[in-house]
Amino acid sequence: MKRPEHNHHDESCAICALDSMGLRVTKQRKVLYEALLDEESPISAEKIYYELKGREVDINLSTDYRSLEQFVEKGLAVKTSLLDETKALFGINTHEHQHHLICTKCKEIVIITDCPIETYGLEVEKDYGYRISGHKLEIYGLCPKCQD
Amino acid sequence: MKRPEHNHHDESCAICALDSMGLRVTKQRKVLYEALLDEESPISAEKIYYELKGREVDINLSTDYRSLEQFVEKGLAVKTSLLDETKALFGINTHEHQHHLICTKCKEIVIITDCPIETYGLEVEKDYGYRISGHKLEIYGLCPKCQD
DNA sequence: ATGCAGATGCAAATCATTTGCATCTGCATG
DNA sequence: CATGCAGATGCAAATGATTTGCATCTGCAT
Image (cartoon, rainbow over all chains, first blue to last red; front, side, top):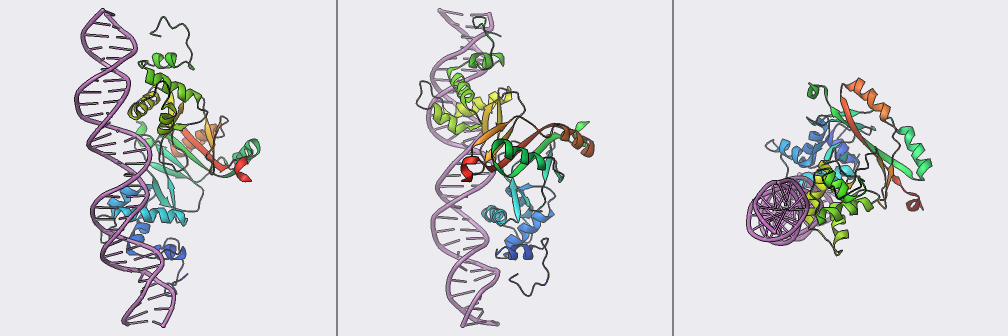
């Protein structure tokens, strides 16, 4: 920690998170990180830009993209894209292996932390000679509300 | 089959496939469908466009995109996007449940037809109240050649 | 053989994302 | 605490993928 005056160390504190990864703590990055913390599921760069717009500190769309990309590089955030959408979604990196359950109608995203394919990866390594580094599982369906 | 002079019915025949889904058999769609049949894994619209370029029949990029999208609507092709790439990939719909094993270095894509989460879907339905309609699983790693 | 709904080509538009550049600002240093 | 400068920001313009409007062309039902 480069900030001796800052006497806690907590991932849910933007200052701690940014500082610990060697990123300068600017007001833009701070509000951006905090906005990500507030989201329960991945959000697009554009959407987060509009959420910040009009608050005390808003942020330019370029800065938004640049910062999100840096968060991802530093492991503070994760980038993904769901369904057949072309745009990227960003979320806080919880350092918890997780998958998404997505409603094909209302686009609600539920996070699933239980993973059925941990062991399956080993089988794949054996069968295909690949050295597996990760996987992505999305499950689609209708959420309870959209089933009526 | 609307073409009585065409006396077989085979998904690997472009004329049959297009005709059976009510799509006009144009020379552009025919070569496009045949090009898709030749691919062993999903390919981008642009790449397929360049592969056709210079052959007897080439095809405008707009037509390429429009036709691929129609193939997907009619269930002749499937659209996906892999890794964190933003561009869409298209492949022939084999009507076979499949997943992808992707080399993070050389981007080779291997198709896996064995699926570990058939039964897991049922658990999710019970736990989350969703009516599951599908899922997508991608597995990342280094292929044998890239491991050196 | 023929008309016309639907398909194509072209160019311009759109949407998400990135980049160049001039200006600004954290923060390490004295 | 003042200060310099590497790194961050805002703006506008560029890029890359994909889509669309429109005039022209072409399968295919008749």
